[in-house]
Length: 182
Image 1 (cartoon, rainbow, N blue to C red):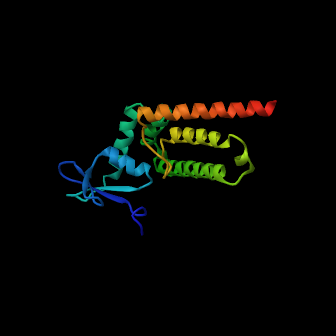
Image 2 (cartoon, rainbow, N blue to C red):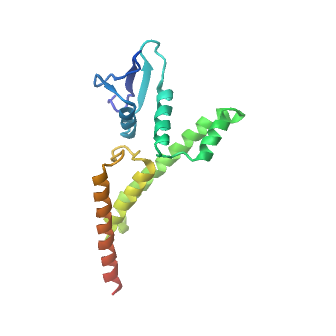
């Protein structure tokens, strides 16, 4: 099996420091979030007790992102999650959430596949610009969750450059459409 198929093993020492067993160095929660965004599964264990701490750390990563204003979970979803811990639905919620995210991931992959297929629309003038805009939108909506796509916040200059590129592409597309109308 390749390294990508095995979860990345992270050990937590008594000092609460997190140790990447593959690269033999210490990592932060943000590093772990980056591994996950890059498509890698992780497993975090306590070195002394052997307890699996993965869930605890993943929840901490989500909480930190939410507290920084990177809200993905609407209040009503969070409220329903809290309610699910006190109802009979507790056993169904994990299965429902897993199925929902699987469907979302499959839909996202299908969309990208359709956009990249040899569709007659791909030969339309300006299609590449439109596709780049849609991919940028999808990236913004998913936080770069698709493996192989760039992820994480962009540097301010890169973001402005990207926005300027989109504006130029849009102007080019509008010019081409204007010529087609004549």
